Image (cartoon, rainbow, N blue to C red; front, side, top):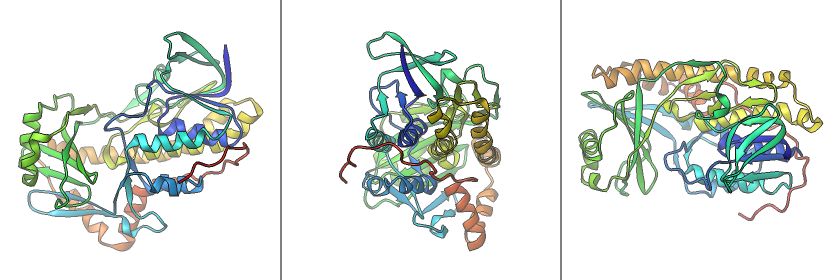
Length: 399
């Protein structure tokens, strides 16, 4: 039987950030990731200033800046009549006045590479977590054999589909839509920056500028088929005629079934849920990665000392939920509000530009606009690294 101090299910943003921070503090950590690599297309890749500041605090800012990325300083919405500026991140204070769009696998590789510098950190790929034993994690290893990893604390950081969140009381808020993600080629002459396109007849799509291609999200009513590529392509060509000539080069469609929910309690003795395992987020505002990272930073700040002592109480775990739950509630309320006031009416063919125009007016008034983009960029309660670097890492990689 294997043993460690902290066993983490999931090598996503929350799991790897938490593993890195705890290893940095001298805690023995094992992260179990069910896949053999991080190459998943259309995973969240919207990195906000709150996460960029955490990377700066860890000395990873320059290496992150060297990753392939596209930076957006303004977010726009396009209706049949006009283009509206809905957020101007140049109003922000601080170094990072933009949102970075980075392939999630590059971001995760960066965190994993840094974490591996610490001898007390282990990342095990092709290891699927099967359940919580009460004192650790049961998982299936790369060889197909089932094993148990005993731990002082187990953490569910493996997303909304985590088997570890089963049995926890769950509060559902619903979502009126699902999203079909796909790629289209992007030309240098195209417009720049991400935008939301709202059209008549219940049509809605998101376009994210990824430099050499557009990452497109075609929004459909909840639980309805996204449609075949020909049908989706025709809708995209109607919404953005300048893309019509490239529809034949559309990539495969990947469907996201949107959820908005959260656990009423994020913990039980020996087990803590963070990130999407604790609170599944809508893609509205693109905050998923950033809330997951904030959860990880808060958990590390609050738990590294109890873990170093070899004992974590439910009071310690409750402190993590008390710290992070208010921010989660606020963001989910805003997501649900946007879904009810903008997305649902648009999908039902009764879109009104009034909410977008109101936000656009706010964005043009510096004090109010700064408040709006600060909430978007940093959230309600931004976290900062308070974990000491107690372990002795190997040499920092070049770059």
